[in-house]
Picture 1 (tube, one colour):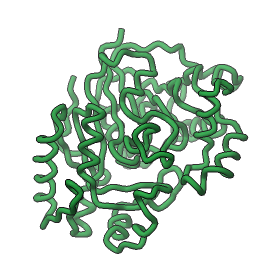
Picture 2: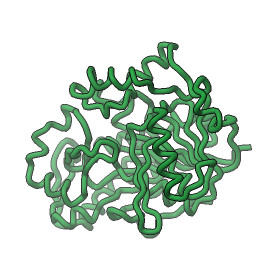
Picture 3: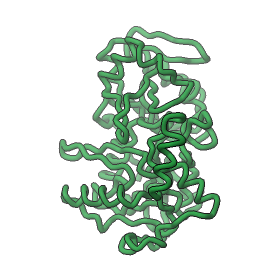
Picture 4: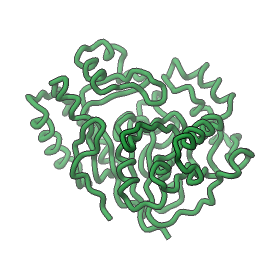
Length: 340
């Protein structure tokens, strides 16, 4: 029997620091499973464990904390990428027997990757991992599922969930196939309701942890994030201080001031109950404090004034939001609570 489900997902354009939140929840939360519900190895999560940095692109973060880690039916999976991650985890002493793959997850082929490189990589700024073509074939009912591939036979999941579950999102709200700036988006559902594809009722969802940064970033191509942002001295200094490079591609991320209007919309559409806004220390390094609110730029004298303004407006405009936390770059915020 499933007791409850908690979900952690990104409220922006990906790269919001979900990895450290899921890491914290996996370590200290009483979860039986940590599950991915969408996307493939176009995602990237960074985990810090005992001072050591680890990266995964497809395999859920629960494996680092001895939790059953599930790749769900609405994920797409690259066999070679999966093999590489399995070997990487084995080499670093983690138990890969905890990792299971839904038999219904679709397999990315070499043809998918080549098509992505030729048609979408430069035009739409994809990660060239074959994600879009694979999802197209899935919904065209011509795809290949994990259960059809001999390699996955020892990893196939029995599709049974029980106890307490943590679901780990990939990308972010504004990269969602429906809500993002189409076609400069991902090919799957990034919103929390997509997690129900793992096999549970939405009524089981207890907490929705939404991740954001104190400034906005975007990898890849998007007219809302023009290349001119890369030449802005303020944004360049923020990107440098925050080490804003894509986990999967290594591409330099474009930086903008936090758009509070977009953040409020994402919180309300997703039903976010707890928000963690990270990298507040980065703005302190560059000593610039600014956001966009009601389509206007609002400047502040220091980080405390900025945090207060954000807190007041989020509490007023986001009725389902219970808790607001601020954190630094590589740390989960002190006082962050897990409900039992």
